[in-house]
Image (tube, rainbow, N blue to C red; front, side, top):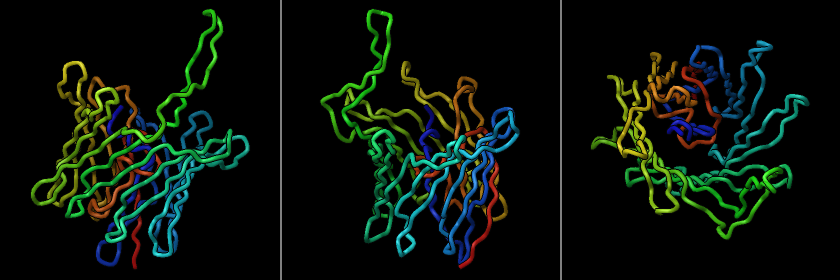
Length: 311
């Protein structure tokens, strides 16, 4: 896995520039052969809040875009996002069916996001089941230090069982362990001036009951304060050494919005799928966040278009 895999569905943090700000309208991604991969479109309400996000996948046979998913965003009376609902499109019937949702929780005195509960929809039982819980931990300056993801263990596992060496079937077994378990931790590093230097991704080792570092990444900024390079390294579990994994490169417009995001993998990582991140509003906002709730943007290159909103 890669750090960018924890992009599963991306968090957008809106930053204002004086009395106006920018929002993404369309993102298009491409594969290693520069063929179209995905198209992602965003619609906003009258207050400028993201209303829906739709994702399309390119079908090379029909040479058309096929609708894949839709995310709907909900807000309270103060314009604070309360959650999201993700639906998948049935190609044969064109009907939307629910598959996941996110419930947000904020700190009352600051309004900062402190928790997100991710649930998946079980069509066989027509009910929502807990899947992940993300905790956003900040310091006294309200800088984001950690995003800790827990996963829900419902005490059930699926296992292939073979009878007499001939017949194999899937069986659902129960385990005595039920409850929330540590899963992934994303930590962020800053300099003494508060500029983010990079971060680290750890996985939880259930046997040793400790966090194990897996990925680390460092930023390079331009003179305007925008990240133009993000270098990744992954830890070799056999040697315990850090190895180059790849590098993200970002290109900005005159308003400090990422118009192109590109990932250059290392030679030993050519077959891994990658997901892209886009920064905007002078890096006060992003789409394709590490542990967010929006769609994933697969590809090694992507372009984004923005439009300006005014209060």
